[in-house]
Image (tube, rainbow, N blue to C red):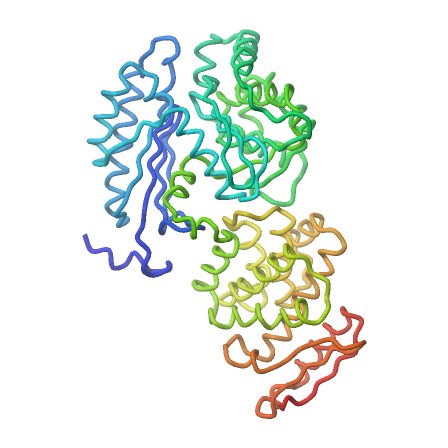
Length: 505
């Protein structure tokens, strides 16, 4: 098959890889642009096959579910070939692990997919879940919980290190079989299983990192109820007491009433009450401060495990912004010049900036030009929407708002765009001031360089006493017209300085 087209609009020289995840509830296929620190999906499909339904009571996967899964895997095989995927990592979890006919199913599934399939042990599944969280939130500290259709994996994580873990039969499909429609029976079984966990941190409150579609749906309900300004779930934080209030409401709802709630899919309405019951039991018996949603789980953990130690140490936010700079800016070299040029203000000349703040400014510089192909009246708004909803990781929502607003205002956009007004709610006064300083500095830079490399490194910008001094080589003096003077004056005003323009020798 001729796959020469596959690099159109993508990072060149990457070999596409895919993950096939055969779970108790869904069978998922995700093809990525390449195995890298910030992998970008080029195709993502989930099919609810319900392989785990009935396993707890009969010990067998239902034939209708098996047939559905095999048909799905045959489709994924063709997609794999068509997308030019060279390497596929196929995994199966609780249903295939526990069912008496699991081994026969895996043999048939491997033929349908034309790829070997690894049936993960509970311990291995917990490990990959932890890797998934760490791939998106490298400094995560607490306990990760991955709720699938058939099992719950709990595992300690501490700033890049994996601790003790356990697999419990608490997936909603399995619970539904065991409880037979009785929420009281389900609650008793949940408590009995959680009694087996002996590694939860004592003393200081910790964060609980929630993985899995059921818990993401719970978070989505919380977002809608609170009219939250962002739709991004990764790193969405819910205080434990608010999460418990929501769990109590959801766990007592019927499936028909849940289907009426915005953003709750009909497929998830079946698993949501029991998923909420499991989460509430965990929160009730532990000193958990926040529920933190992780969009990354076992699939992303498998991919992360294939990276070298050097690749794992890369910052996934800056890696993703770097990719956007390559794909969408007029000049990748210029984007990196912006980083160094704005460093003059923040790093070398006394404007207070923490390491975390500097990192966000660098990210904003890298993506400052991604909207240039849009009409000039809408470049700021388009950039705002892309960044606010981008698949970034290793960034909280306030940081995402900082980057989005910095690029929005760098285009001189002062339109009352609803999203920009809402994002400002996520920032404190200091962060908002830094947004305006960063965007003003970028406006000066673009008026000097025309978004092309080679000019900014020759122009110095520094503060001295109460002056903001820009020195320009004689050969570039004609660039200093009214636009540059006006934009430099705006930046100086934000810094409580007087603008000065001199000639650089």
